[in-house]
Image (cartoon, rainbow, N blue to C red; front, side):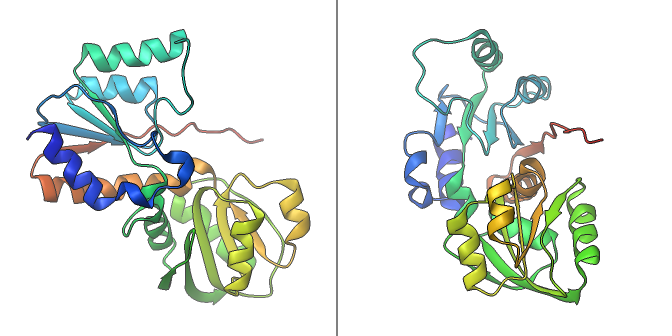
Amino acid sequence: MQLKDVISILEDIAPPELAEDFDIGRIGLNLDLQNDIKKIAVALDPTEYVLNRAAMIGADLLVTHHTLIFHAVNCINKELADSLKIALDNGISLYSMHTNFDKAKGGINDALANRLGLSDIQETPIGRIGSIAPCSVETFVNHVSKSLGTHIQFAGSKEEIKKVMVFGGSGFRSEYIDTARNYGADAYVSSELKHDIIRSYSDMLLVDATHYATENPGMQDLCPVLAERLGIDVEFIEHDPLIKTL
């Protein structure tokens, strides 16, 4: 299949116009080798491990959530050079779908809500909110940990958790949590919890389930969608940074 035809499907799944302003010029086809696509690799991050694995399985295109180059580059360091060399030597084009895939139907936040078993899911300006069978804080945080296969941090308390808002990735910012509060959420699940946020939102249960674990399900769920729509082989590459805790 021609690369342009694959890109057309990717843009239909996650329209670029959904992206936040800071993503303009950063998402989409980041490395265009104008190659024919017989196999696609999908991952959260274009790490060196992921690129090597994509080369090993014979992928012609690597689709990731995060882009290889986010800030403008005036000097290429060795790490970036090594990563680009793997892609160039093995004929792997690179495509990223970031905040546009966060917002898209079936994207990062929908996948996260589904993994947590939320029902009556509603779109919000920046995430998803839904209901869960009433449970205690302890039951809910254990459910999050088990559902996402990750360690978690949490703060705040509620007598009962019934309504939950999710935001995949780095979502512990006041404007986002205010949205959760306005929707009457008992719990907010995201990543990269900060001290000032804990102090300001003690009336809610705040659950930090790591950046990787809150976004990875969306990229995993993308694979069967691409395989069905494109009729070619799509393989997910797992590369959890495995942050250690004591």
